[in-house]
Length: 184
Image (tube, rainbow, N blue to C red):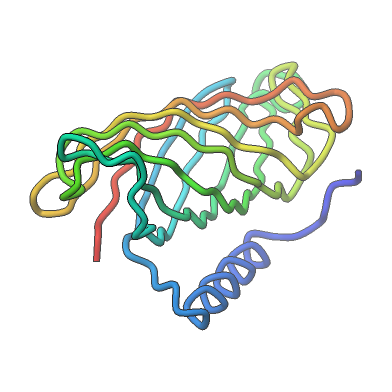
């Protein structure tokens, strides 16, 4: 699969259309987030909108399994393009991820979460001897965080990107990501 040529402007337009489509189907966003991550000689910044699920599964002792949809737009900057020190690669990433979260019933305090979503990269990733041969990627993560009484959510997660071996090479890319989110 070839790299899909589009700019950050195209990515922003796609995210705006996704937001509009979601809003039109009565699934309002309930929070917004900003994230920063680092790993594999690559830095990442991500902006997102979330839509919480109202369903509670496995409710027990004031906690339950719930979750949310996460629609994101990211920018990646690799600092070792094609494994050459000082060479840079910049790309955009659009993602859609269902996130499962074990949380208190009032959605405050400590939580644990995990997810597997889909992502579309603007270019093929080739940095620090890690290559992704497709623009389509799965992004999975596990994380921990805390929601304060003022609805500020601070979290930390480990995230992995891979195409699931649809096509080789598929070295994967790993990030440690810090997140701040605000509920509406």
